[in-house]
Length: 222
Image 1: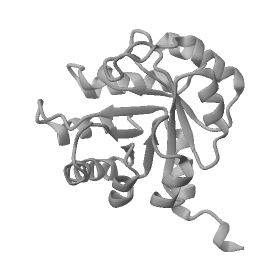
Image 2: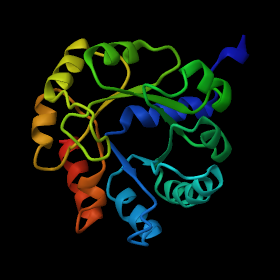
Image 3: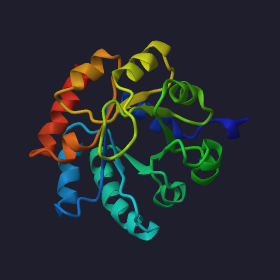
């Protein structure tokens, strides 16, 4: 019977997810050339989960960058997320695998990464959010994009009404608002019922990424 009990790592990761409020997606910052310093700045100032998202990389190159992410996450006690690639997530022993609607089914992803890592799902409508809230094997989901975002060109933005819908459903698992969220509209996101957010440009393009992360963390904790 004991073989069916979750491992200590699985329990610890899910406890950390339950406390997480600020989730950052970033590329390798090749243009800025400051990846280690950037990660230290944002992780020291309240980012709970950081996902490396850069399309078009070969697995070996992605894994090389993820070594930098892993080291920073270990220094600051943050969760490391891999986007889409279950094989890469398994190879680097990521804490989180995030899947889009067109990616692997969760059972197939679980076969690759095992039972310990967290698995999240992107959702873009009421129906998708409702399904993700109860999808077996998933641990969290994201709802959005709340507003149009260049990271997902052409994707309709359902607006805060999607967040209001999810909030009224009382999902038992954690969920994050995503898409065009910045410090100027964070109040609207919180008013719609979200308490966790995924941020990209509002931190990655900030003049002071650490200060931006700190302000997001402060307002999400209020």
